[in-house]
Image 1 (cartoon, helix red, strand yellow):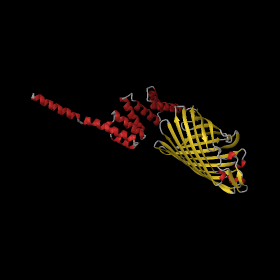
Image 2: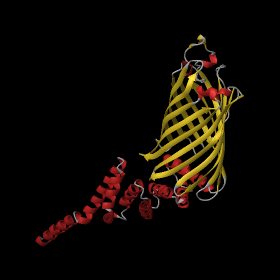
Image 3: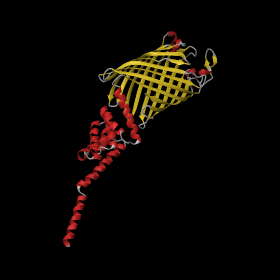
Length: 442
């Protein structure tokens, strides 16, 4: 009896010791490490998450939960090869894991292995998926299809229609009268004053791309925008933009050259012919950052107001970078416009401006774009009517929101504010424009 009690006591001691052995503690420690890495990733501390994962890689590699968060951390810092190996190990143990396979497909895509990415996305598409993942899989398969088609000459086209409201469609002035030194108080035509009007527009674009080799292609595009206004005194307008050119990669420099033609019709009458050539050069600064220089030489030819005809030279120095998942683009712009005849030098001007664009994907389906621009224009001679040398300060701010409905359809909305301060009252105006519409890509 005593011996049985002794053996039971020893049995409990041994079982208790094994329960708290290093092997049992290791499972608990692995879970703590996995939780810590996940927490760092959720708080956008990807570098710290990857460092922690690397510290424990030797201890926990091939343990499924650790491999998964290790792959997420590696992908978050751009270590795509390491991420792919980790997700592949997870799928060997859990072949039905949707999250791991989706992460593997994304990693293949980001690495540029389009064929492998397509295989994983197609395998996901054949399964029953949560709605959010299903939409992203469809979108990536659509992108892959376009990428594979881009190796051959192809067309990219879209059609867009919408409605909006414009507080000052003709860029008119608020005042009913202006003071002209030689004439005194002059009453303006209604078309030259602020006119608030609703409108609808339709726009279409077709682009043709013909790759010449892996780094070069020929391209051509034409777009048309027509807008009709409810206010009779507001001009309907039709913009056409045609461009054709060549681009290539040379010693890490992206070089492009193109010619363009952009006529404008007001109330179906030819108003302006604008044409010229653009040379562009871009170069990477670092991962996700680029800089470039664009040079444009153009001619503006007015059908009726020939005194406004002028040559144009524009230079834009720009830089772009990726930060916190968003794209930020900055530019400094210099320009000069010279009248064709010296007696019209009062319409010649020198321009200096800055511009900024922030593009951020808010969710997989929502995209936001913020644009801001400021331009100072100094004219070269006094205006003969007002006896003043004109100076304009133009501010433009725009916000765009886009929602991707599916692979082809999207809903878009725009809000734009424009204000021009001028030393001559006739050219001073402000404008607020709101627009919403749908777009179909095909």
